[in-house]
Image (cartoon, rainbow over all chains, first blue to last red; front, side, top):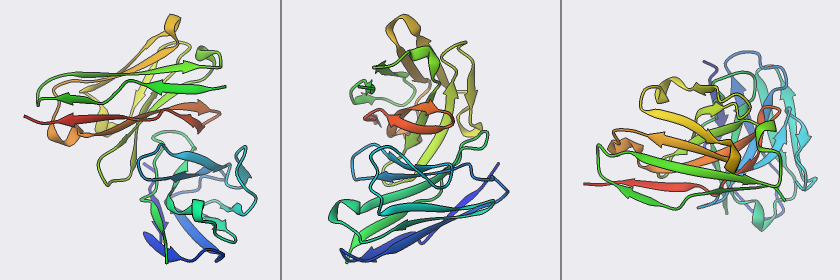
Length: 107
Length: 117
């Protein structure tokens, strides 16, 4: 099975800062990677698919990049509503493994 | 608008069976597959598998083969997750998520399953 390694596991940042979360994949998945945001007690929300395509309604301060085995999610100018957990997930066949998550907290 | 509405929280004893529903609306149910995702308390998301809503064929992740079963009631645009012989480690929130060309753009609100003697 494809393994997904996210880093960092947790991150503390202030409103207005720029942060980057990375996802390393155990084998080449081309651009078949998605990013989700999950707030406490809520269901995940799709942010990015196909590595760099923003989902409908997602603010442009979010951006995804990468291909093959290395991917990243960048959030420019953090807003209060951006705090929560972030997960990468490959969508290249099954099983559709998720990364271990990154918890983004307010500094 | 597209919605996935799941059944409410349940309390079960070890060894019992639970069946969770996920009712879809706002789109043609059989045009999109349905996935199931488990999230134990304080833990990460874990993909359980998916069901092809057109032909009813299910695919399960290895950790969920045996006691888990996906099913459909197509006339009611509803997908089901059944877990038999519940164990403490099944205590979690379970989400359904629509398969959109292989990513998950729509999710249910989650169903909390509590397992306690």
